[in-house]
Image (tube, rainbow, N blue to C red):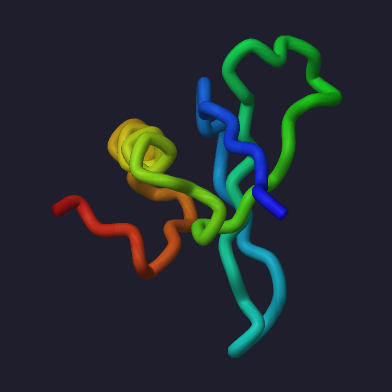
Amino acid sequence: MQLEEYDVDEVMSSVECGWGKNKRILYPVKWLDYLEHKDRTEEPFDNFLVGGCEKLLEFHQRNPDTPRDYRLTDN
């Protein structure tokens, strides 16, 4: 089964979920060509491909004090 890929229009924020080892960051995402609020989803870092990771970096450059996934680097 092949998964569908969607283009990120904008990363809206970042949210910490869970505790201890289970803590992770979720990113509410607005998808390109999906204009309705109901189409937005919260995605973990693992679900972002190269283009989406660029959007994550742009989000964190604009919002440096928000929760950030430890695997996301500026390099």
